[in-house]
Image 1 (cartoon, rainbow, N blue to C red):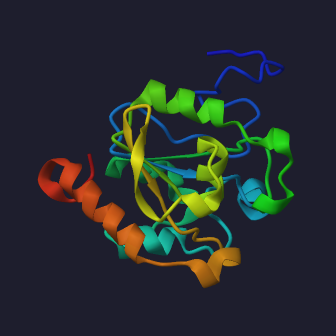
Image 2: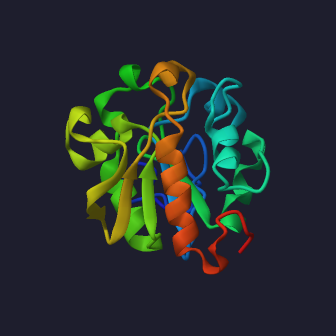
Length: 193
């Protein structure tokens, strides 16, 4: 699928084009984890959650979403476990506080959720959820939300970023893994599909 790079309204569903880290999306996923934007490290190595102090990959394994701890460069293996990845700001990198207003593309994220129809969409930070849902972060508790996003269950999780170390909690991630287990055939979220 070719797209005009000047057309910022059309979602880049292929993960090609100007995205710093490609989407990991396909139909039939149980869970899509949505970050804010790639860190500078992730953009440089073109891999999700690549900063050495980021807790993302150890957390996925600790809660049973993956059978072993994957390396950031192995991110494309996640669909084997019914998991996809994307970000709200696909064309910018850095910490949330320095992202310009035009970095956020919630309309693209919503179009992807509509196209791929995952069972659960989980934001890996309150900021990404806030930018997408138009709600202040203080109105977004961790865990499942009362509303859906394009028919998908909606969750908000504590950030695994080293900058959010003081706010990290494993319990919401474990609750998400338990819910994924309920929805997955065979009940094991780490079983390859």
